[in-house]
Image 1 (cartoon, one colour):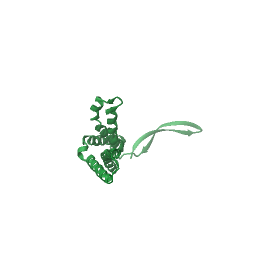
Image 2 (image 1 turned 120 degrees about the vertical axis):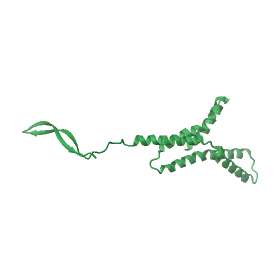
Image 3 (image 1 turned 45 degrees about the horizontal axis):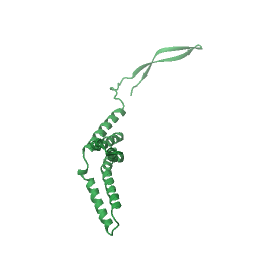
Image 4 (image 1 turned 60 degrees about the vertical axis):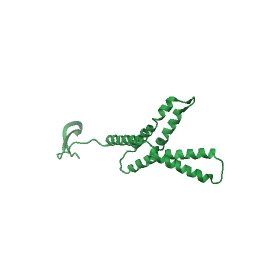
Length: 176
Protein backbone atom coordinates (compact mmCIF):
# COMPACT_ATOMS: atom_id res chain seq x y z
CA UNK A 1 0.00 0.00 0.00
CA UNK A 2 2.82 2.38 0.84
CA UNK A 3 4.60 1.70 -2.44
CA UNK A 4 1.41 2.16 -4.45
CA UNK A 5 0.81 5.50 -2.73
CA UNK A 6 4.33 6.85 -3.32
CA UNK A 7 4.87 5.39 -6.80
CA UNK A 8 2.82 7.99 -8.72
CA UNK A 9 4.83 10.87 -7.20
CA UNK A 10 8.12 9.13 -7.98
CA UNK A 11 7.14 8.39 -11.57
CA UNK A 12 5.86 11.92 -12.02
CA UNK A 13 9.12 13.36 -10.70
CA UNK A 14 11.14 11.21 -13.10
CA UNK A 15 8.92 12.02 -16.10
CA UNK A 16 8.71 15.76 -15.54
CA UNK A 17 12.31 16.41 -14.46
CA UNK A 18 14.60 14.47 -16.73
CA UNK A 19 18.26 15.41 -17.09
CA UNK A 20 17.66 17.85 -19.93
CA UNK A 21 15.06 19.85 -18.04
CA UNK A 22 11.30 19.67 -18.15
CA UNK A 23 10.03 17.19 -20.73
CA UNK A 24 6.83 17.83 -22.70
CA UNK A 25 6.14 14.12 -22.90
CA UNK A 26 6.81 13.80 -19.18
CA UNK A 27 4.33 16.58 -18.40
CA UNK A 28 1.73 14.91 -20.62
CA UNK A 29 2.24 11.53 -18.95
CA UNK A 30 2.33 12.97 -15.42
CA UNK A 31 -1.46 13.24 -15.46
CA UNK A 32 -1.78 9.48 -15.86
CA UNK A 33 0.43 8.55 -12.91
CA UNK A 34 -2.41 8.43 -10.35
CA UNK A 35 -3.70 5.40 -12.23
CA UNK A 36 -0.45 3.62 -11.36
CA UNK A 37 -1.67 3.74 -7.76
CA UNK A 38 -4.87 1.96 -8.79
CA UNK A 39 -3.08 -0.80 -10.69
CA UNK A 40 -0.39 -1.47 -8.07
CA UNK A 41 -2.78 -1.25 -5.12
CA UNK A 42 -5.30 -3.45 -6.95
CA UNK A 43 -2.63 -6.08 -7.58
CA UNK A 44 -1.71 -5.99 -3.88
CA UNK A 45 -5.35 -6.38 -2.85
CA UNK A 46 -5.83 -9.25 -5.30
CA UNK A 47 -2.76 -10.95 -3.86
CA UNK A 48 -4.20 -10.60 -0.35
CA UNK A 49 -7.54 -12.02 -1.41
CA UNK A 50 -10.69 -11.99 0.68
CA UNK A 51 -10.51 -15.46 2.21
CA UNK A 52 -10.82 -15.53 5.17
CA UNK A 53 -13.22 -12.61 5.53
CA UNK A 54 -11.05 -10.91 8.16
CA UNK A 55 -8.70 -9.93 5.33
CA UNK A 56 -11.28 -7.28 4.47
CA UNK A 57 -9.83 -5.33 7.41
CA UNK A 58 -6.44 -5.54 5.69
CA UNK A 59 -8.02 -4.13 2.54
CA UNK A 60 -9.40 -1.18 4.52
CA UNK A 61 -5.99 -0.62 6.11
CA UNK A 62 -4.24 -0.75 2.72
CA UNK A 63 -6.69 1.75 1.23
CA UNK A 64 -6.26 4.04 4.26
CA UNK A 65 -2.48 3.93 3.91
CA UNK A 66 -2.72 4.67 0.19
CA UNK A 67 -4.98 7.65 0.95
CA UNK A 68 -3.01 9.15 3.85
CA UNK A 69 0.62 8.52 2.90
CA UNK A 70 0.75 11.08 0.06
CA UNK A 71 -0.80 13.67 2.39
CA UNK A 72 1.82 12.94 5.03
CA UNK A 73 4.60 13.22 2.46
CA UNK A 74 3.16 16.55 1.26
CA UNK A 75 3.09 17.90 4.83
CA UNK A 76 6.64 16.74 5.52
CA UNK A 77 7.84 18.29 2.27
CA UNK A 78 6.15 21.58 3.18
CA UNK A 79 7.71 21.47 6.64
CA UNK A 80 11.21 20.81 5.34
CA UNK A 81 10.95 23.54 2.70
CA UNK A 82 9.65 26.01 5.31
CA UNK A 83 12.38 25.16 7.80
CA UNK A 84 15.06 25.69 5.14
CA UNK A 85 13.69 29.06 4.06
CA UNK A 86 12.59 30.62 7.35
CA UNK A 87 14.73 32.32 9.92
CA UNK A 88 14.57 31.21 13.54
CA UNK A 89 12.19 33.70 15.12
CA UNK A 90 10.42 33.29 18.43
CA UNK A 91 6.92 31.91 17.87
CA UNK A 92 7.75 30.94 14.29
CA UNK A 93 7.65 27.24 15.11
CA UNK A 94 4.08 27.46 16.41
CA UNK A 95 2.97 29.26 13.25
CA UNK A 96 4.87 26.78 11.10
CA UNK A 97 3.24 23.78 12.78
CA UNK A 98 -0.18 25.40 12.30
CA UNK A 99 0.60 25.81 8.61
CA UNK A 100 1.76 22.20 8.36
CA UNK A 101 -1.52 21.07 9.97
CA UNK A 102 -3.47 23.09 7.38
CA UNK A 103 -1.43 21.56 4.54
CA UNK A 104 -2.00 18.07 5.94
CA UNK A 105 -5.75 18.65 6.31
CA UNK A 106 -5.97 19.98 2.77
CA UNK A 107 -3.95 17.07 1.38
CA UNK A 108 -6.21 14.55 3.14
CA UNK A 109 -9.35 16.13 1.70
CA UNK A 110 -11.45 14.68 -1.08
CA UNK A 111 -10.37 17.43 -3.51
CA UNK A 112 -6.75 16.24 -3.34
CA UNK A 113 -7.62 12.63 -4.27
CA UNK A 114 -9.28 11.54 -7.49
CA UNK A 115 -11.53 8.56 -6.67
CA UNK A 116 -10.93 6.81 -10.00
CA UNK A 117 -7.63 5.12 -9.06
CA UNK A 118 -9.09 3.87 -5.77
CA UNK A 119 -12.12 2.44 -7.56
CA UNK A 120 -9.79 0.83 -10.10
CA UNK A 121 -7.85 -0.73 -7.23
CA UNK A 122 -11.05 -2.16 -5.78
CA UNK A 123 -12.14 -3.57 -9.15
CA UNK A 124 -8.73 -5.17 -9.79
CA UNK A 125 -8.60 -6.48 -6.22
CA UNK A 126 -12.07 -8.01 -6.38
CA UNK A 127 -11.51 -9.53 -9.83
CA UNK A 128 -8.13 -10.92 -8.83
CA UNK A 129 -9.55 -12.32 -5.59
CA UNK A 130 -12.37 -14.03 -7.49
CA UNK A 131 -9.92 -15.56 -9.94
CA UNK A 132 -7.67 -16.67 -7.13
CA UNK A 133 -10.56 -18.23 -5.23
CA UNK A 134 -11.78 -19.98 -8.36
CA UNK A 135 -8.32 -21.37 -9.09
CA UNK A 136 -7.76 -22.68 -5.55
CA UNK A 137 -11.17 -24.31 -5.09
CA UNK A 138 -11.26 -28.06 -5.70
CA UNK A 139 -13.21 -29.09 -8.80
CA UNK A 140 -16.83 -29.91 -8.21
CA UNK A 141 -17.53 -33.61 -8.28
CA UNK A 142 -20.66 -35.21 -9.62
CA UNK A 143 -23.28 -36.60 -7.25
CA UNK A 144 -21.86 -39.27 -5.00
CA UNK A 145 -23.22 -42.72 -5.68
CA UNK A 146 -24.73 -44.68 -2.84
CA UNK A 147 -23.66 -47.89 -4.58
CA UNK A 148 -20.12 -49.05 -3.95
CA UNK A 149 -17.97 -48.85 -7.04
CA UNK A 150 -16.27 -51.93 -8.41
CA UNK A 151 -12.68 -51.90 -9.49
CA UNK A 152 -10.68 -54.64 -11.11
CA UNK A 153 -7.26 -55.40 -9.74
CA UNK A 154 -4.43 -57.60 -10.86
CA UNK A 155 -2.58 -59.58 -8.24
CA UNK A 156 0.04 -62.26 -8.01
CA UNK A 157 -0.63 -65.63 -6.38
CA UNK A 158 1.76 -68.41 -5.55
CA UNK A 159 0.41 -71.89 -6.29
CA UNK A 160 2.60 -74.97 -5.82
CA UNK A 161 5.73 -72.81 -5.70
CA UNK A 162 4.96 -70.98 -8.96
CA UNK A 163 3.82 -67.38 -9.21
CA UNK A 164 0.85 -66.73 -11.46
CA UNK A 165 -0.88 -63.46 -12.38
CA UNK A 166 -4.55 -63.49 -11.54
CA UNK A 167 -6.52 -60.79 -13.29
CA UNK A 168 -10.09 -59.58 -13.24
CA UNK A 169 -10.39 -60.05 -9.53
CA UNK A 170 -13.12 -57.75 -8.33
CA UNK A 171 -12.71 -55.63 -5.24
CA UNK A 172 -15.56 -53.62 -3.73
CA UNK A 173 -14.82 -50.09 -2.61
CA UNK A 174 -17.08 -47.33 -1.39
CA UNK A 175 -16.71 -43.90 -2.96
CA UNK A 176 -16.92 -41.00 -0.56
